[in-house]
Length: 194
Image (cartoon, rainbow, N blue to C red; front, side):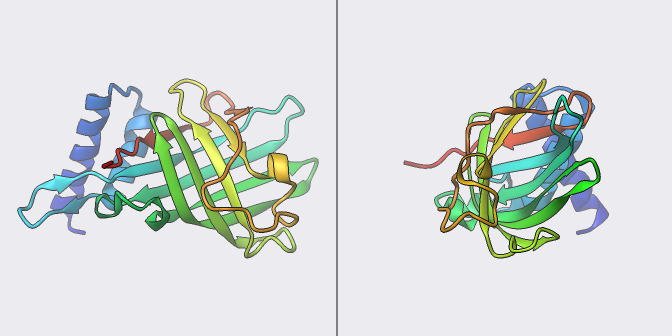
């Protein structure tokens, strides 16, 4: 991508944020980056935004001081608007407490968003948790704009190693709170054509 195209894409991302009423430098940077990854040009040269997205990085709040981080770079291209199973991207998470813990990275296989809530699922492609590779996990994010929330499939079905045949785009209610000052998640709402 050349410099002029990158500038145009970043400008479009900023314009979308203004239109949506989003504020804050962190949200603007995340939305501009997510827009640049999947904005496409039509035959007439007109720019189209992606159909849905979940981006950002943040730590979760835990009173015991656990170090838990989630990051997302999930997108549904405008051309795939009718099929959330064509979403692409990755998401990662890690959880450490008292020196013990694990991390994992998954490749997105479904993304559904509605308003400021997103459900993303994916298959673990890399992890230091024995037995996690090849397992599907799902995560739900609520982009509140202040203190986002998050939930994950293993809260109700056991850790990813124990989970069998989790369907695509299945997560849990977003019961966890993002630690203040650690980042922000951005959800681009899906507008299916029914």
